Length: 168
Length: 244
Image (cartoon, rainbow over all chains, first blue to last red; front, top):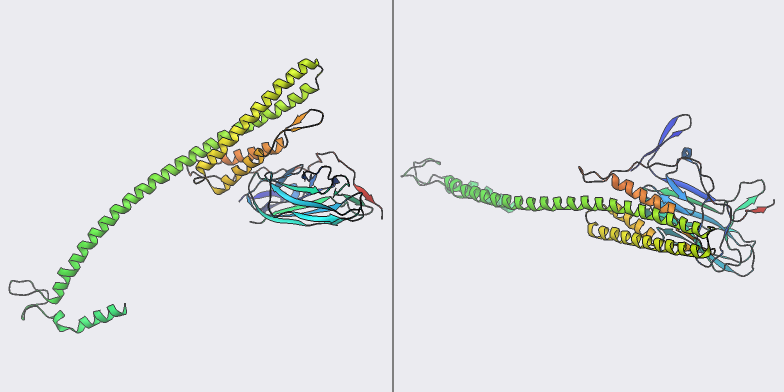
C-alpha cells in the first residue's frame, strides 16, 4: 500500500495510506443529445494540503492506487423549460464500460423543481482505471441536466459533488 | 487407544511373556540349550522386522518425495520464465501502444491543420486523403497491439498477479472503446488522448517495478499532483442566479 506524505500545518507530516478525493463542478451541464453524456468535473478540493491521491481530467476520474472504493455522487438536477414530466438518469462508467446496477432516475415536471439525487457504489478499482459519471435524459430540448446555482449571500451550489474514498 | 491400552496392560499379567524360554535361562540369554524368551521374541521378531519395514518405506517415500520436488521445481522454473517473458513482452507492447497513440494524435493535428491551410482545394484534398489513410493505418496498428496485449494476457493470466491482469484488461477495454470523432467542420479528434497516455504511463511504471531477482512487482512511487487545478474547460453555460 502506498503511503502519501505531505506537509501539514506548520511543518508537520501526515501519512495517508488510502486514496480519497472530492470533486465538483460549478458549471451547469444540460443534456443536448439523446446519447449518454459524461458529466464534466471542474475542480478538486485541496483537502490534505493540496495532495491529490486521485486525479481527474475533465470528466475522467483517474485512480492511482488499487483498492476498493466508495463512490458518492450528488448531482443537482433541474430543467429550464417544459411542463411535461421528463426523466433523467445517472450511472457510473469504468474504463468506458457501464457499471451494472448503478443507474438511478429522477423525473422532473417543471423548471421550478430542483433536487439532488444520490448515486453511490462500492467498486474495486485498479491503478490507472478511469471512472465517469454518465447522464442521459428523455429529451434534449427542455434543458434537462445538472445545474449550478448561485444564491445571494451563500456559497455556490455546485452542479455535482463527487466524493471518492478508498476503503481498504 | 482404549483397546490398545487394555491389550498392552493385559500382557503385563501374562507370565509366559516374561518367562524365560527354558527354566534356568535368563530373559535375554542366548544359547543352544535356551529357548528364546517372550521379550526376545518380541525384540528380534517384531521390532527388528518393523524397523526394516520402516527403513524400506522411508526410502520409498523419500524417493517419491524427491521426484515430486524435482517436478515442482521444474514447474516453478517454467512459471517464472513465463512470467518474466510476459512482463517483458507487456512492457514492450505498452511502449509501442504509447508511441502509436502519440503518432495518431500528431497525425490528427496535422490532418486538422491541413484542413485549415491556405493551399489549393485539390492539393488540400490530396493531403487530407493521404493523412486520413495514415491515421487509419496507425489505428489498425493500435488495434493489432491491443490484440497482442490481450493474447499475452490470456496466455499468461495464470502466472501474473490478478491485480496486473485487471489493470491491463482495464486499459485494453478503455482504449478499445475509443474511436475517432469527426466534428461538423470536418476536423477530427482522438478523444481522451491525455487520459489514455496517463493510463499507459501508469501501467508502464508498474511493469518497470518488476524485479528479476524476486520475480515480483513493487509498489511504484506515485507522483501526486499538488497544484490547485485551474478550470480547464470554458464554462458552457452560466450558473443560475437565484436572488434571495
